[in-house]
Image (cartoon, rainbow, N blue to C red; front, side, top):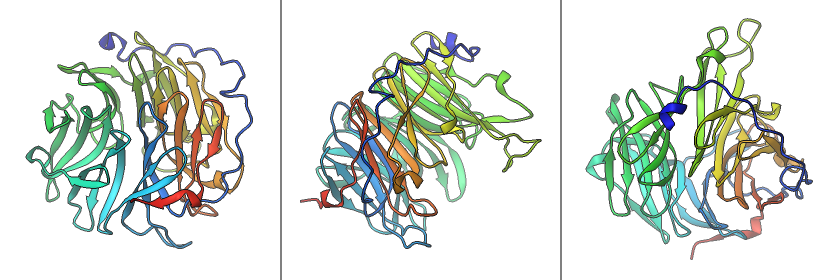
Length: 386
């Protein structure tokens, strides 16, 4: 089925959803006070109203954030600072395993030695199996306590030795074949040992394609149609999300040089939806004309946030219908860049922002409850771990 869908021609976009609570209601109240740190990444715990997030140490108005990170847990009502990592550890991502456990990964600074740990019940268990020795993790996708997928690059000094893909079975990391032709892999979603998705490229983030694991082998699931390319532009920066029987991809098509002019038009953003049998192209609203930073799914619903833009709204689609915009408040938080978005259920989605230039020097968080987005930024709600 997936092989038959690979590289298919664009289809027609779904019908616009009828106005209603999901896209027609007014935004929630202003975000109010910012959280006392910048937010890097967020991962909702499936089936709950809880989430894990990474935060960076605060910085001055004209200085970069200090190295070192916090791991935060959001209970749905309040934030808890679970772990404060040393300043020589620079984390890059978090993936929820359960309400009490999450994966974190990054590097030691300035040596850039890889760092991978499972944080459970507040205890940090650093992972150093032989399979992952010298592997710098690029991404982890988790589907529960016994189903996590990892990919990364193995280096010896500065020498690249290839990609490594592995699956956590609840006890140990097991090697999985690397998708054919891949020099970079980013796991994007899993619902079991026989259903995993990943974005792959031959290097960097240019000319990506999507692959699917069926328990035995990887197959190509989607590749951007060559017919979309104009004036030497190429697809890049692909993001994907999946739930059983459904998937989304989004990517930007642009020139590989910086800037745009009459010879190098502004980037175009594309998205495509997989309904279990075929892919169809779905137009992306102008609010995300600079690209999509991340796509997330729960069941038949999907959300996405724009890249390199102020967070004016969140894109939403049901069953591949045309994206509509769920508006956010227009307070000072709207000047912040979207950093990450993650869905735990159709009625629980969390989005976070990172500091940017101008007036946004802290992080903000928003929760979607199935009707509208609300603030989750109370400083009073932040408390240390017991």
